[in-house]
Length: 167
Image 1 (cartoon, rainbow, N blue to C red):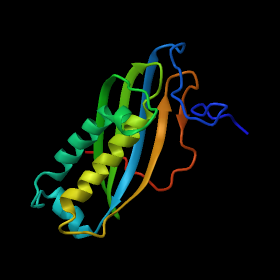
Image 2: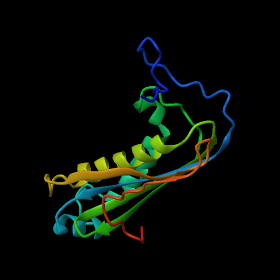
Image 3: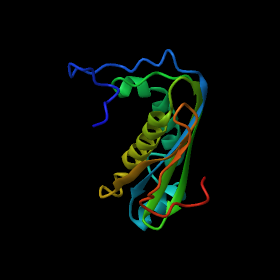
């Protein structure tokens, strides 16, 4: 069985010591989907949601959440983010959300990209729930990561067909 890096021999959890690792450029992209009715998607895209500009607010929420990842995920290293981008694309069943996070650090930014996507999805839900309480957040996954000792990685099994154009 593979030894878990956050678990000591005693079974206690600990933060991984990355002090001996080299600082390298790192990037991670994550995606998720908020499934919703066509009417809800149209209201969001046409700026007809009573709470305001859904995508602008969700983008900001995702970026802000990425910057707070180490406060939200126990044992996650704080990294100084150089860039976080959150994008959206309409899909047949709702709205796709994508985030890319970049930094130069001793550890990766996969969690920051995932936190950004998740919080952007939650914000879409919060802002549109008055018109569609049945929305479902789904398919949140790491799509790719680059940099670091372990090198590049791309998900081998997409759970869905992703859009090619993002806003």
